[in-house]
Length: 319
Image (cartoon, rainbow, N blue to C red; front, side):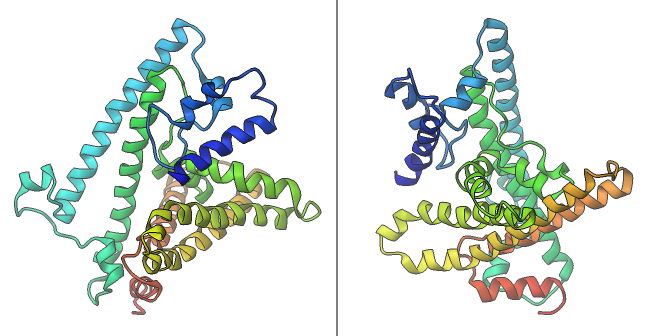
């Protein structure tokens, strides 16, 4: 239960630091410390400050919030059905769609299989699997997030979506903001802002890099270490070490990608116009490629650092 409560208590302490808990009782905070709408260790809806700002104040606002929530619940069902259809048709998953198809599926290997045991073979299959896993991950994250946020909106809190069209993002930082919004917010609130506010004030680029690195690398690694505390208690330290050994590569590449993307966005803001046509398609495809590739090192222990890197090199024809 430690990681589940830790970040929610963090939002409680942040509210106290901002002077927003005056006049509240502890039971007022139980709503998000043990939320009825569920969730993971990541606090969807954050803390009392954010929930109070988004709460419906009249019947019209409540109706809008609930209609938006109902729409998200419908989308959650559609995206989950689409995800299972993809897994059944392309990977031969034994879900409802896979059983319906019988033996009539493409039978791509899963990325975990390729990372665990890199194979020599068709480069096109390897690249197809890398991109398909990205699409499946986005659908899965969107479906689960829409379900939780949909319930929150029906309760009358018109909070921001957890996932909002990340596959249309034209920059790495844009995808990061749209894919898992509340996880990004957690890292930004507890790691990015404190670092940015305190260190390297005389060096803007170093200040930005340090803040991004603390959020996307240090905070990200710390979050996932805490999420595996049950495995540590069960004596599965070797599994935890193996997962984190590959994940640090993912977090490092993510940090560098976000930092470079933020620098480029600053330059775009100084004169370049919006992307259109093929230029926009190229930018979107580049973002897909970046997140699809770094996902190779985010397979939760399916392979070790050597096998993950070997599979990546095989995609470049170097394996």
